[in-house]
Amino acid sequence: MSLAKLFVAFGETPVGVFMRDSTWAFATVEAVHLLGLSVLGGTVILLALATSGLALKRQSLDVTAQGLLPVFLAGLVVMLATGTLLLGSKPYRYFLSEPFRAKMALLVIGTLFYAALHWAAVRGSGSSKLILRSSSVLLALSWLGVGLAGRLIGLF
Amino acid sequence: MSALFDAFHWLNEAPVSVGIRESDWAFSAIETVHVLGLAAMAGTVAVVDLRLLGLVFRRQSVGGLLSQVLPVTWIGFAIMVVSGVVLFVSEPEKLYTNGAFWAKMGLLVLAGLNPFIFHSTVYRTVHDWGGEAFVPARAKAAAAFSLALWTTIIVLGRLIAYYPNEPTL
Image (cartoon, rainbow over all chains, first blue to last red; front, side, top):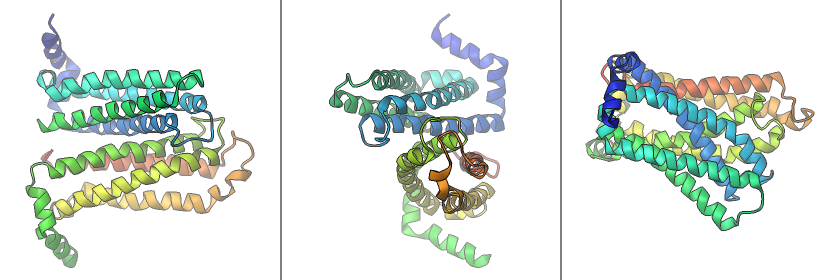
């Protein structure tokens, strides 16, 4: 089954039909998507600032990273769950949407950057300041890209 | 009541308001800043509240964590206020009759009062709370209230576009 057909099939499942037909369900799921965005975005900002040495300087980086990880993961789970539901409302339209495709690519990249930065933070003083700083910039930019692409989906 | 509407109407006809409304991109750009600013403001507030509730960073002192995170929260709050004011300025007449908008504004006042009371009462003694694990019940209550308030505020913000019945965005 092609990817396009999978997307279409998802839209015909009971949950897909429900999301398509109910305006209040879509609005509610979208609102929860926003809540997850706040939490996930907050941890991304804090990890980026901490690894750049710009904030949370009074404890060691590994402590900060360990503390933020469960919050990031919880936010990510909420985003993936609500995002999947939102997708179910009109999956083929999203499939064709270039901002949506860009968002998915940036989502993967952003998650990989978070994992890499978390691992570097936990590992200790092995990484150079330059690598940590540039990685945090890239982390922040990729997630900013996810947010911007998400906004563009609604506009095109 | 009428004087308030007159003020909203006057603002609605002001060049800046008309300009944003008529621009192809301005409203969307400002709204994007407002939504993405949530990460800096609400996301960091969530981390602070979760610490007070003893759910994250349990081995870091409350005072230490808050003093390091809250500056980011303040920057986020500034972004939210500035972008929010511009959003308001762009369509005051439409917002005048929007129940979700008024509810959100009311809760924002509460959301401002909550930390003010928290910081001037129970938080004053944070260094005497005795060990990282202990957080006074009143501080936990303030944190839970904060989470509930901001959640509702964010949801109401989303609902503004759906009020009264037809989605505009």
